[in-house]
Amino acid sequence: MITPVANLEPVQLSGAKLQRVSLHNFDFIKDKDIHLHDRIWLQRSGEVIPYIVSVITDRRTTQDPLDLSSENPGDKGGNEGGFIHPPKNCPSCHEPVTIVETHYYCTNPHCPQKTKQQIIHFVSKNCMDIQGIGESVVDLLVENKIIETVADIYKLSDNKIQFQLLKFPGF
View 1 (cartoon, rainbow, N blue to C red):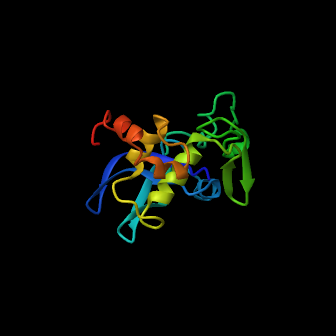
View 2 (view 1 turned 120 degrees about the vertical axis):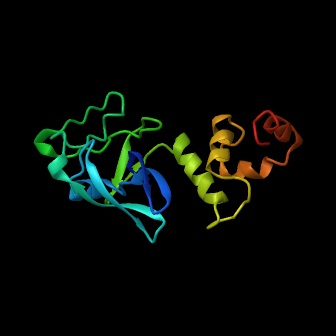
């Protein structure tokens, strides 16, 4: 699933430094009328997860709605009529996306970002709870083609792979 994320100027909230907040889906952006460079009211839901409560429109510096398709080469969605145009292509692999209800999905079964997210979920506390493998380690392993599927995690005990891992900081 392609989840839009807002990159923030770093802000302290409830003792945490926040730099990113989920925009959930493209309907959320439309419903909240979020524009690029908007000022927003944030709260930490359950004192943990940052959430956009509202947009401060009277301080808006631009009338251009957030065009989430602009990061995709060759995909210039446009802002006709003030509507937000979600990407037509995956921001990671640039393959077409498909829409299911309010969610956008990459159609490429070999999309590197999709693979990373599957592995991150698999090693997470809510799944296999594999200690010592978090998002940054998964990024390192996938980017260096040490693992390409969830099943490859079980090959990490192979001596050849362990020797490769020793080249990286923290291993």
